[in-house]
Image (tube, rainbow, N blue to C red; front, side, top):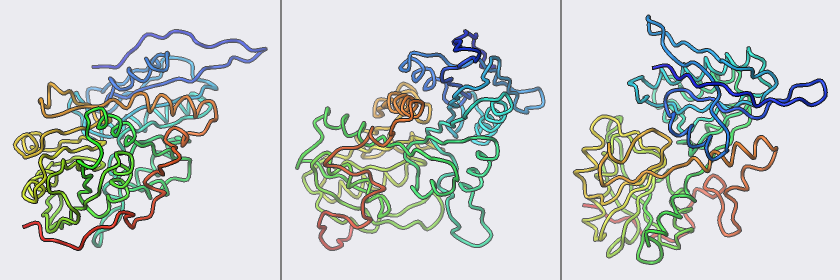
Length: 361
């Protein structure tokens, strides 16, 4: 189905020049989020045709004047609700950026709630691509002059770009939700599912005023993990496992089983991006996890996923960031608090003292 919205003229005259207000365009991967952002910004989504030719090539047409305008293009790089692949979402974004550049937009910002290919940020063996870097090159070549994204799998992906990158955080929003659910304080232990996620877990533990634990695992093959040890005291506590994304769900299911065996009273998981690849929804529903909390960076509905799942909206975070970029104001102020530092600014060494390794088995 083509994404074709009616145009309304928001341009205004200043002297002999026509000044355009910021414009928001969207691909097809996450239209509902784009609509929600536009509503919070009290604006509209730009008039564009996003469709397919009969030979399955992507068809893009910008159907309003964007000359001299500040333009934001929203597209999550994930499977689309109409059945398109991650690569379809990538091509839509690239072609929309190219079309806007050729239409003389003043500045084009790619708003990418979920940055696909992020896990392919390094070579793990010989003769492999670094796909996250290649995607960054493609976005810049197409004409993106700024990137806004959310919780990159690895913060160093920002260095793949030669244009400004705003890596926003969903953690404060998720912490507020957990506090509203009374999940904070000494009765809660925040758990990192791997050593690399310790800075993220520390951020949650600080905000929730809770203790910290870490799961040590190994990956015998891609998308398969095995829990080997748990560092930290989880007995008699509610375990809140935090991660940046949920793919197959196997890691979290095994982590929950290990935590329950170690004495945790219940397990709640929080992740920014709910990819739910393959049988992930079934795996999570059959697991010991009581609640799965994700954001709408990837399009899903709670009815589609089941009663165990809770979806939080990131529309306000993105809307505030877009407003600040347009006004040339600091974006990092959105997350700054005197008693907290963003995860990427923290040391990789945990500030909480942890006991020595204990077997999870």
